[in-house]
Length: 269
Image (tube, rainbow, N blue to C red; front, side, top):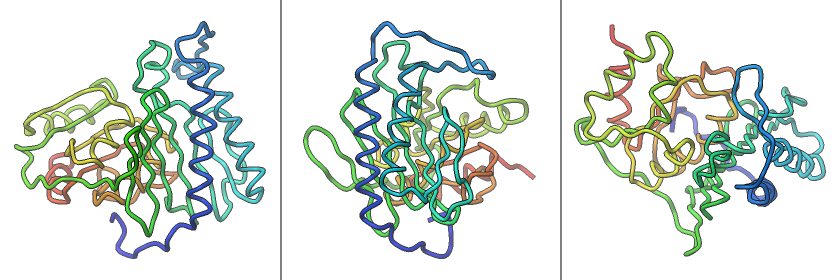
């Protein structure tokens, strides 16, 4: 765990709701996938579609119906009651560029924060039929067409034995690129792509490290409970727990020894 004090178990009713949110968003995404949809550009030039907006709206409606006092922070429709005791953080389509390219590796990301700390996370891959659910007080589970099973990271004590993922080398601005390169040149197998799927593979024990930057809270907060519930470690590059105000730089590892080694390279004296 990235924090020394264990967090209380996440109530099962919230885990159930997270599954309903993923179901609703996934149905909308699949309905638009590989269809003729208009692509708009946000102020930061990232793409957005009707699928992103409809999927988030559907999730927000379910939250309002079930827990109207909860807050919501979403990528497409902004924040409501962000200072509430419980806050949901939503990314309806993580990997919109892949989605509009007809690539199946896009996901829906869902987190629940309690007093600012992530206590629940979901990675759902609507076109692939896979889902990870992580929550405090229980092991992370992986769901696919063959059933449901616990997810568990694998040991990797040496960076020279590690498989590393990052979505793209272009996500590291300025000095962050040199920092990433110090780790990339030390691992056995650097890989690009994957978006949120790479963190699911880490939780399953097929990937050892994921290093990313320039991420929003809706990109990284849903990953925390998934990775930690599978026995991994996920923090910012300085080893601090991730929260709404983190700087968008993320370091996830299946083995705490690999995490420590990568953090040393990311932050040379």
